[in-house]
Amino acid sequence: MKLVRTLMVMAFLTLWSVSVSAQAVDMVKVLEAAKLIEQRNESRGGGKWFTRDCSGTMNAIFAEAGFPLANRLNKAYRTGMSGTAILHAISEEVAVREIQAGDLIFFHDTYDRNGNGISDDPFTHVGMVMKYDASSGVVDFLHYNTWMDTIITQQLNVKEPSNKELNVILRWPSKGDTQTKRYAGELVHSFGRITTYA
Image (cartoon, rainbow, N blue to C red; front, side, top):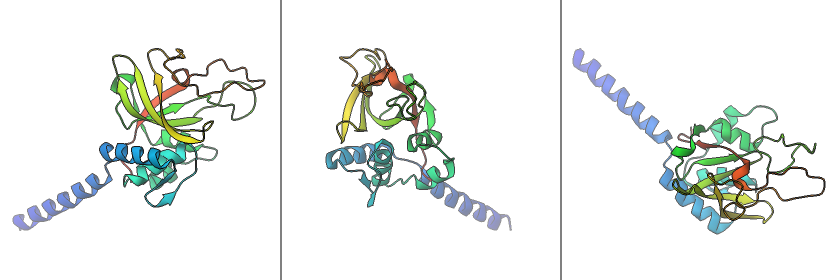
């Protein structure tokens, strides 16, 4: 009887471990998919089309890698949340010193979403870290650049966020816009990591 119980427990643990490992995200595959999405310049992944914007591009990358996020995103959604805010909700926050390729970068105030002329627009943009040099603070990040209408890898610097030589502009000046922070490094809110997809 003890042998039967032991075998049943072992079988259960084996099934459980397979199911848990099947839910884990492989960052090598995610980064390969990100490069492919950038080459294609399409927010399409895993045979599905996603919204041609920053969060749609991130969803396409994970889907192309074989880790669709739809279930987690649907569970996290609350009325009024942007696609970027939902991705933030399912991410584990990462300290700057722990940034890795495949992490997501969340930005605030990349545009005046609510049109009130005040810098109070959270989670307006998201990108993916492709490379990080901790000594210099340089982050190469892939994102959908609205102004260029393209999926592209560009640069920001977490150590020198206002240096115009080291940071791409994410908020372009427009009439009546009083926002003074325009460079990517200045607009970073946080970094996050998605480790599971189911």
